[in-house]
Amino acid sequence: MSQASLPLHAPAAPAPIPLREILPWAIFGGLMLLLALYFVGAEQGATAIFQGMYVHEFVHDGRHLLGFPCH
Image 1: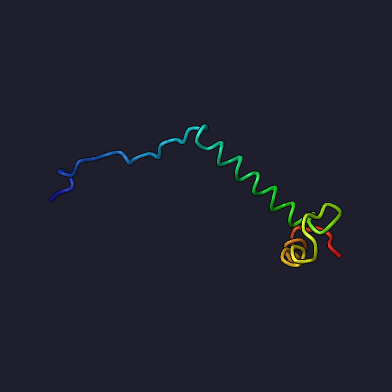
Image 2: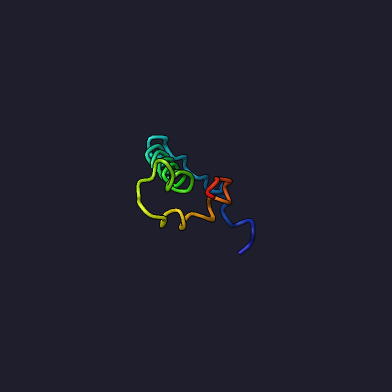
């Protein structure tokens, strides 16, 4: 088959995603990000939800990586 006989088609462009479909996922992702930031930055302090040092020890290295003081 020669090049001349092959049909030429434009490459398929990705379809845009409507904002009403992205917005709930963006809000959910933002809330999860804020929850993670709370646990890394503030849990086991004055606003502690859980007793003990389990959460603090679990996110200890993340605190140092992000620059939060912990000890």
